[in-house]
Structures are given as structure tokens and as C-alpha cells.
Image (cartoon, rainbow, N blue to C red; front, side, top):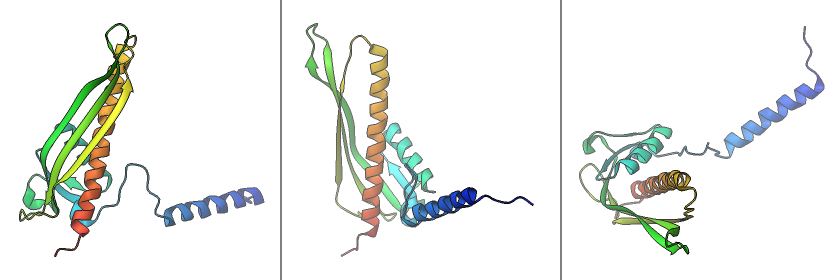
Length: 172
């Protein structure tokens, strides 16, 4: 019969205790969020494909889904305006841009399936700056795509947080 050494036993007890403490404090892996049941089925109307994909991914990680129609949803998100713009912040001595900024604007409103507004119109504005090295054009295009993806991801998380508030808010 195999005997466990004192060191192995202590290590096992430590790992078990640590895992219990981490799970008890509400720790979640990054990217996963806990949503109320009424928010887990969501319909998004008028959003860009990028925002729609991020919303779908967030809902999937929370065991939720985007619905095919507003009648199946607990919350309907109607995008009123969405825009992402790129602008030059500074120019180098060669006349080419050396610093860029991405500005994202999103205006939306939450409704229930009976088309009753759950809260006032909401606006999200995000901005990111980055250095535009003219010697590494391909790398900078890749960096800009990553920044855009992160902007959409942050906007989707903010929409989800506001959806929770809209659903949990007591009606007057």
C-alpha cells in the first residue's frame, strides 16, 4: 500500500483550501460574467457585426445567447447610433501621421419584449491612442485591429452591465 508523505499531504490540503477560498469569494475566470436569467436571452437590433460578435461571445461565456427574435428575449438592445472613427493626432517631420486615435461612439436603449423602455437612452464613448510607426506599417495595422477588437469587447461588457441594471431597476 502506498503511503503519502507528509509533504504531499500538506500540499494537497493547501491546494484544496486555496481552491475552496477562491471559489467562495466569487472569483470567475476573466471573460465570464454572471448574468441574471432575464438577461441571458438577449436580442440586439442595429449593431455592427463586430459589436454583435462580442455580445454573442459574452453571452455564450455566461451560458446565455442572442435570440433570433425580440419575442424570445428577456432584454432587447436597440442600437440607435454606432460609429468608430480614426483620426490623426500628430504628424512627423516627413508629413506622415505619427500618432493616431480611435474614437468609438455607441447610443442605445433597452426594451422588454413588449417594447417598453427599461431605462433612458445610454451612451458609451471610448477612445484609444496609439503610436503609428511608419517603419512598421503591417505591425501597426495589426495593432489597430487588436485595439478595435478591445474597444468592441469593452463596449459589449458595458452594455451587459447596464442591461443588468436595467432589468434589476425597480419600476415606478
